[in-house]
Image 1 (cartoon, rainbow, N blue to C red):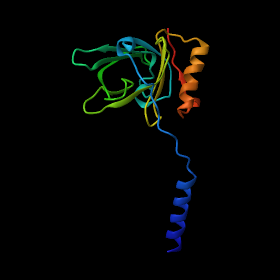
Image 2 (image 1 turned 120 degrees about the horizontal axis):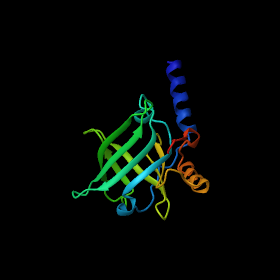
Image 3 (image 1 turned 180 degrees about the vertical axis):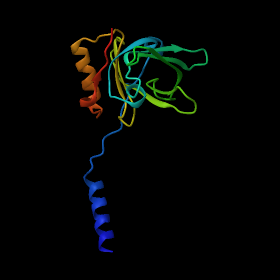
Image 4 (image 1 turned 60 degrees about the vertical axis):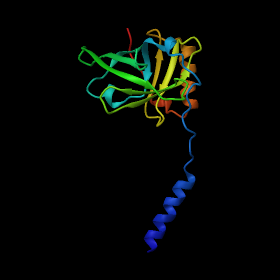
Length: 173
């Protein structure tokens, strides 16, 4: 009985001392016609689908509006063996999100959250993450991003509680 009481006290103490982070917030609005096109991955938090055996470098994502209202998604990268890797899917806008939250599917019925949490007013760079803070990408319209713009993108992610120390640059040509 004493052990059970001790475990209960420890569990309650852990709950009381764990600071709760506010939820990830997106930008208020994304103009999908301006967002469409090709984006270069400048940096990412490593993830299993890009960093396992694939070892993706030279990564791009191309978004194309579809007649049914969804968005075509084509992700390309160069694998560790030098071969091109392509993943095709589609995304749907989450209602009432200002187009800033998308649900991306590459293999039905699985989907991933794609939230635009930072966006340059001129659509030169974007910061994309997931609500669990386990995925993060810094994207740009060109293969390189000016240091000041990159710093602004990283500050945006840090302000949302992402572990920016985990960000890794993505080699581009």
